[in-house]
Length: 95
Image (cartoon, rainbow, N blue to C red):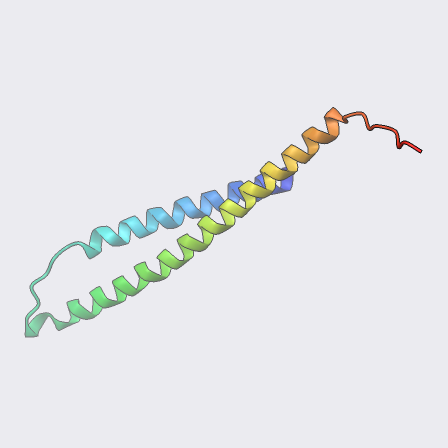
């Protein structure tokens, strides 16, 4: 259970950092440029920036899925351990 909690913490830390990085990239992407012939290199840079953001979006979705799966596993394991501690009495088998 402790290992799952550490895994969830690490996953959430990475998710936070990736979302922060994506936010920083998006702030650069939102700058609007009027591109003429002399500014074609800016268009290429913006295309690369948009591709990076799209890759990060896929990574963020995967990290969300992993976080959800870990949370469900931790909840299920915690519930199972709670049921084991309660140890409800079992009824004897009737002949």
